[in-house]
Length: 247
Image 1 (cartoon, rainbow, N blue to C red):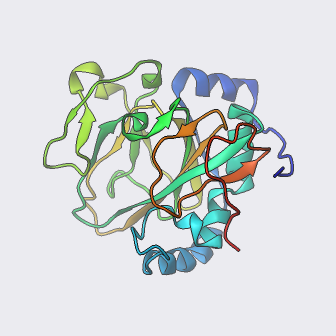
Image 2 (cartoon, rainbow, N blue to C red):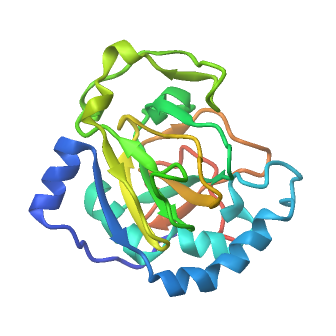
């Protein structure tokens, strides 16, 4: 199945920044007012169980057209195509919701957790709510994607079971990525990132979108109904389950 071409929008400087720093953005996907208009539909999805009865915050692009359309917005997709080529599949989406007191997410490289071979992923992180230092914004370390960081058992004060070994990175090099609703960033599978606990009364919802080129083989699916969507170009390899997006 071929998808209509989306023109590349990145400059040579942006391409170099992504290769050397491991991320791009924030960019504007939509205005704060437009995201405010989308938020009720997003909240409705998060308040209902998916058809398979599993996690409400995981892979909701499979059953919600609103989430699918947000995940494949042209502002995101055009930049992913510029970075990774014309053929892309949508593998996963995840909502990250932080209320007051929600634990921190530890420093980590995404590929450490993922059943993919080879582990090549471009991620978008979309701010549904404002993402600030007070409510646990995303932080990352530029250039950290140039090496593999060992992961060890996580401490009890964070959400994940494994975290990056602090002896292999310098957190003083971090960049704060505060974002307004409707903004997003892009980063790759090795870019070291985390977010602190939410110390405020303000909720923070972010949507992470994971896309892969067709050469990547999904070794383990998230559920029996989990399949990928061709979001640009073609599935030139046929390694993975592929299905149509929701209506």
